[in-house]
Image (cartoon, rainbow, N blue to C red; front, side):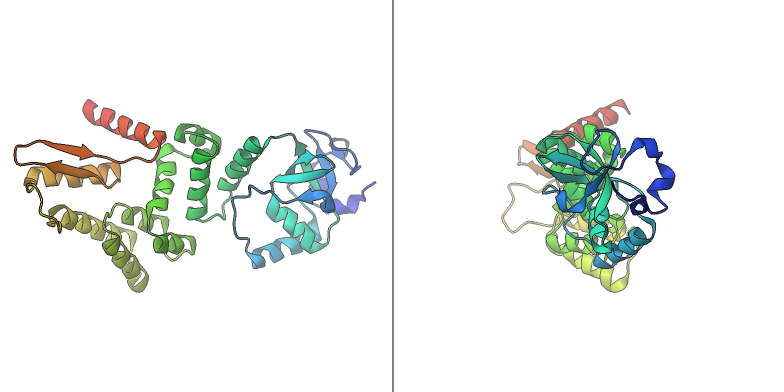
Length: 295
C-alpha cells in the first residue's frame, strides 16, 4: 500500500479516499491512481522542447512540501506508462525524490495521444508564442485538424489561431526574438505583414535597440508596405501598375495579412495571387471576401 503522506496536503484534501486508488498495482480508468515513477516514460510527442530548470526546481520544492495537487495523465503500454500530459509535474516529482505520483490512466493510440498532448500544451499559460504556433501547426500537419476544429478544442478564436500561425512565416531571427521575449506578439504580428525580409529585420532590430511600441511598429510596417508597392523591381516590368492598383494591393495585403502578388500587362490583362498554406487559411479568405461582398 502507498503511504498517504505521499499526497501531501494537496491532493488528499481535494479527492475523496474512496475515489483514490492507493494500490500502485491497480490502475482504474477514470480514477486517480498512484503510479511508480520508475514505470513512467516521457512522452515522445511532447511539444515543449525546453523546460526552465529554475522553474522546475521551484515546482519540485512545492511538490516536496505539498505533494502533487493536479494528477498527471498517462496511457498504459504493457507494464509501463507513457505521459500524455503533465511532464513538468513528473520531472518535478523526480527531482523532489517522490517514488510515486497520482495519475489518471487512460487508453489512447499514438494519434490521439499526440493531439491530446498538443492541445493540453497549448492551454498552458507559460508557453511562448512560437511554441504555441508550432503546436497549432503540428495539429494541422500531423493530426489533420482544421482551424475550426482547433478553435473548439483549445477554446481560442480562429482569428487568434491564424495570428499565431503567421508567426512561423517570420525570419528565424524574429521567431527566436519572440521565443526569447525580446519582442511581443503584437510586434511580431505587425512585422508579419512586411514582404521584404531585409526591411523586416531592420525594423526588428530597431524594436530591440529603441524599445519601440507596437503602435510605432505598425506605422513602420505600413510605411514599408507603401514603399514595397511603389518600388520598381530589378527586372524590367511588363507595365507599371496604375496608382489605383497599387492602392488596392496595399489595402488587400493589410486586410488578409498576407503577401499578395498583383500583375498587369499593357493591355490590362493580369492576375492576382493570394497565397495560403492550408485549407483553413483558404476558408478564412473565403469568409473575408463573403463579408466584403455583403458590405
